[in-house]
Image (cartoon, rainbow, N blue to C red; front, side, top):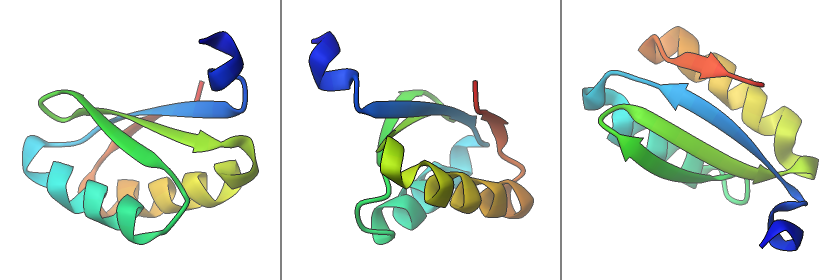
Length: 74
């Protein structure tokens, strides 16, 4: 499994539950940028390729301003 995940990075995001569908829609509309996985409530994990990291981070920064999302880029 580790070989499959080696080309991916993950971002943890927490948004109010009412914003989950909006955030997921924005990420999915940005084709190839990432895949969104719901952990619980408004806690999300977003996986992306290392080549898409900067684009995903830019989108997440914009979404933070718009939705109040809490981002974990570690």
